Image (tube, rainbow over all chains, first blue to last red):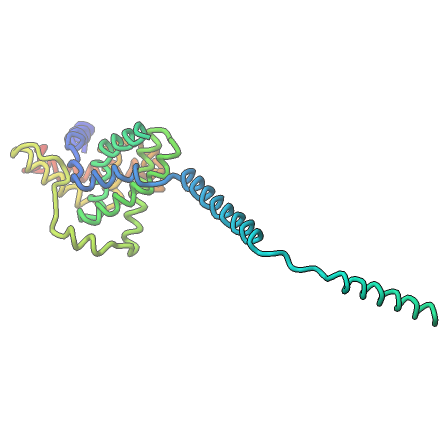
Length: 96
Length: 169
C-alpha cells in the first residue's frame, strides 16, 4: 500500500461518525456523575458518622450515671469497729 | 456542583460514542459493550474527580473501558442484563443516507476482520484521537508497537476498501 492509498483509507475511516449513544445508556452514564461519591465525600461521611456514634455513647454513659444512685458507703459503726480491730492487732504485735 | 455535573455530561456526550464504538468492536455484542462501558465509566469517574488533564482523561477512559472489558471476559458477566438486551442491535457508525450504507457495512466488516489488538489501536487512533504513546499506555505496550499495529491494520482495511467493489475502488 502506498502513502496515497494509506491516506485515502485513513481519511475514509476518519470520516465515519461513531453511532450515538442509546438514550438509556447516555442517561445512565450521565447519572454516574450525580450518584457516585468521591473519596473525600466518603471520608467526610464516615467521619461524621463515627462522630455521631461517639457522641451517642458519651451521652448514654452520662445519662446512665445520673440515673443510677451511688453505692452506699460503710456506716459509722462499721468504721469504728474496723479502727478498733486495727488497734487490737497493733497491741498484740507489741506484746510479743 | 452543577458546573461539574455539566462538565461530566458534556464529556460523556463527546467521548461516549467513541468509547461505545471501542467496546462494541471488542465484544461484538451491544449488551456486553454497554455493560463494559458503564463499568468503565464508573472506574473512569474516580480519575475524573482527581481533575487530570484532558489528554490524560481520554487515554484513561479507554484504559478503564478496556479493563472493564477484560474483567467481563474473565467471567464477571451480567447474564440477566444480557438476556434483557438480547436481540437489540444498532450500527457501529451513524446512518448517513442510502449511498453510505454499503460503505458503512464494508468498514464494519473490515474492522471485524482485524485481530483484536489491531482493532483497538485503530479505534483509539482514528476516532479517539489518541497519539501512539497514549495508546501504548492505555493498552500496555510500547508506542512503537502501537504504531506498527496501526500500520498493519490500515493496510488490511485499505486492502478491503480498495479491492474491486470496495468503498475506495
